[in-house]
Length: 279
Length: 121
Image (tube, rainbow over all chains, first blue to last red; front, side, top):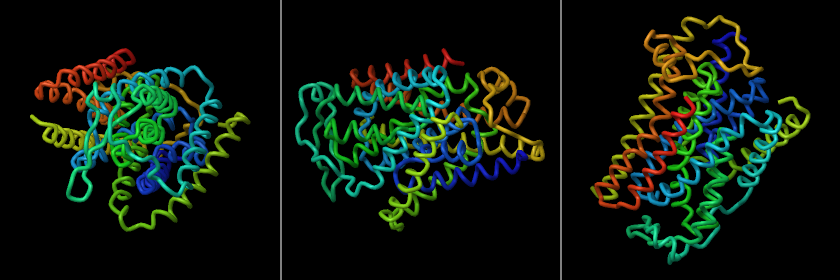
């Protein structure tokens, strides 16, 4: 394959991944890595390096919009970033010490979770808590979000458990070059009882910082290859931008089901190939 | 300085960083394709590339000579620096709000990021 053909194909795949990732809320990274490794035979280390930089680009771009709407809670985000950045460094170090087959299998398992999540009907799960517990009060984590014309106040609970899960989300991000937004949302929405919309936007806010913590390790190891990262970053960014603009008009439910099937197929292929030592 | 103002300034900072990084990556990519479009490539087996794409000094030198790969990496370094700048901005912002606790929390995150970036590269 010539450099031009490779660049154009990767650009197209990445734009599609970014578009679908933004429409479904799962992010572009989870699709771009299996697409590059399974379709084009790119080594998974180049794929996760390119994915990591695209994750920084899309999360920073989207965070810029969310922050202005007043949903994300920067104090919660900043406190939990201590956990995710430490986890991300550990994950990036771990990535160099385990085999690429093992990375592929772990990636497949994360994809399985993503597929399951897109089949799930309801996204708003927990009932938000009105009052904070003692530790959350100590850290002044409670806030309010816009609901109609008023601001709805909310409390925060279970900070240590949420913090622990965030370390795990960071490890996965550093190991696989993804944003691991799904796990961040679980930690905030289900465990810390933060309202869903606040959880998703704050998660997005944290993804870029988490990814930046492992980016240095990736760069110095050569995982961030300019020839692979350039079309992935530009493609995912354009796709995600388009995806966020058509979001209101698209039939998201049908799309989630289709996307879930694709992700499920990718997950199984990733796990099988990892076990057979082909990825 | 209040929370709303802090947040809207962060939003401008993030968008500027991403757009600037994308523009530099695009310029580097265009240069690389113009020079190497017919070159056969394969990324099936991982080989850590030359140091001029892996270290900050190497990237700066390569980008300074207007090489496509160097410019792409420079754009990616700018992109990585964007969330770091956001955290640095939060340290200052919380300090101006006289929120010592969160100025300190942001400072810890900033220290972790800088340690990771400097230690690795």
